[in-house]
Image (tube, rainbow, N blue to C red; front, side, top):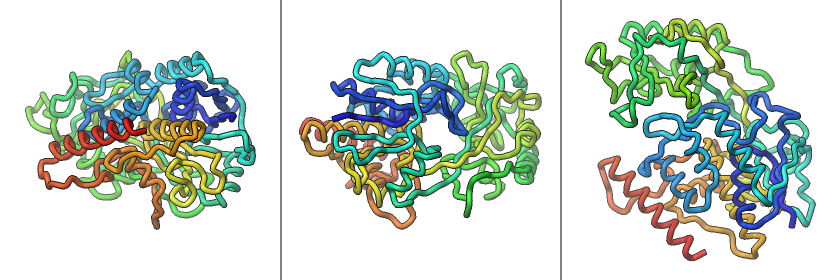
Length: 436
């Protein structure tokens, strides 16, 4: 049986590496560098677009739990991410150029993977001797997007996603910025730009009134994914919304005043040299000139040099509860699997996980074994259940503790409750793997 994987993003690379590592021959198709989506610029594999953060590492966090489960299941990409780590407190953030380069080299040098640098226009669902994993991402376009629409009866959904701007380190005014991580986690891995009340209110007003860039190629109402909400949309929800979101000052003390700031913008290193920083939580669709004008109102960014402005782009995902089975294969064409954010797994780590889960389902199919079943108590099991369960208003979902079944006992302390949920998940997954 031939295995074709369409797309060398996070999900596609994870799937290809897992299958090759387990003795299967794989053909991996990638359209770059011959053709680029509107959001991609790097010709390498596993390109991170919106952010360089793979979120928290702690086991008692949703992302940390998902990572722990992936490692038990045979993940390949997290080890690469560790090698490309940049300081980010309790989070796993990477130098995205280095990460893409190392993933590309790993895939290229893994026996069993044949790379096809060409654009695929058709899924090829009628080939009885071929299994295809479609991992072309939420920016799938052109003839392939049309072919997927044909396969799925046109049942695809869309929303807008956004990326944050990046500034140079040398352009920052360090007299107004201090280095620290919230609650002392990490070694002062973030740069902090503290607002006083007056400065924040002026910034909020400017942000609300700033001119936005037009959105092209989209008909109907605008749907924005909550996890990547443009900062100007957030500002429109109320004066304090940002202060309880990405500009929250909790866990920080401004050394100049000895007090907690009224609001605080954090900058996270974009590369290992720390020559560039991205504005954490500042996904935006403001016009470039407006980004420069408004974001320079942030303390310490008065003369900021922008090496990349924030952008907004359309993302497309399947109506997965209707179209996909619990093994991520199309109900109408069982030899076609989907993985990555096109399925509604939202987030970088989640995308890797979906590629891993699809690959394990393909492996089981080819070995004549039953489809792997993941306990409901696990993050992988809960995400798969969400993806495959019919719902009235399906939207992308990232890892979160709320998606897990409740504990039998009520635990008021949030940290303790998360620790217990995480340990329960790891134990359940370990037990289920013994039985496979």
